[in-house]
Image (cartoon, rainbow, N blue to C red; front, side):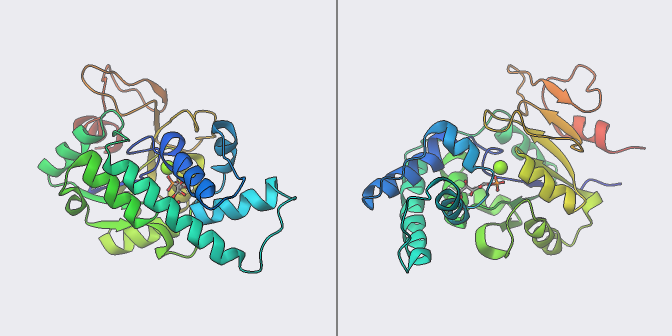
Length: 254
Ligand code: XBP
Ligand code: MG
């Protein structure tokens, strides 16, 4: 087996975007529209069970707001709220509001230097990916990824495998030639259903998720001065951060 490509999720994996990014942007859009919807930190954790911002708003109303009288054009309202939320979110990223998680920049840089192919598979809106890559990584970072599979480009969002199938098809690689990076159970289920081995880096919203079947579960990718903790997976023989050398050792069997 020859590892040829790394495929990254975005939200929660490249950066901790949910609590202080997406959530804040949703609330700003709701307030601006004069709605009494407010997603506090714990509620948002529950709402993350549904991926995709538009889908999450529908879920919120169905599940938590039986009192809300939907207007006839509810889908259009959700679409307008989502567009406003995207504006708020990308503006927040442009202000440098959300940094990358530990080890992300280092691993991407190393992968590029060694000709490892890179891709993105996410449920988030393409504009959100562009803003994060440009402002948290590098102005040219979008070009680092051969394919950015994002948002409504596929009909079914994670945990459906569609976005991974879309990316694999574009890369023209078999799942065994790639490795996925995810932070959530929905992400893992999507990658697994596409037969991809998956490295998980947990975060505060996902640490209690079921990651059975993941190839490796870490608290983060680690840095030389910020060692990772291995929560599940093979022995890493004293390594303190995930780099290509460690990936070769644990994933490429002779
Ligand atoms: C990420 C998401 C996204 C964001 C919001 O899931 O669920 O919906 O919360 O993005 P994953 P949009 O990391 O598994 O891809 O509002 O642009 O949909
Ligand atoms: Mg994620």
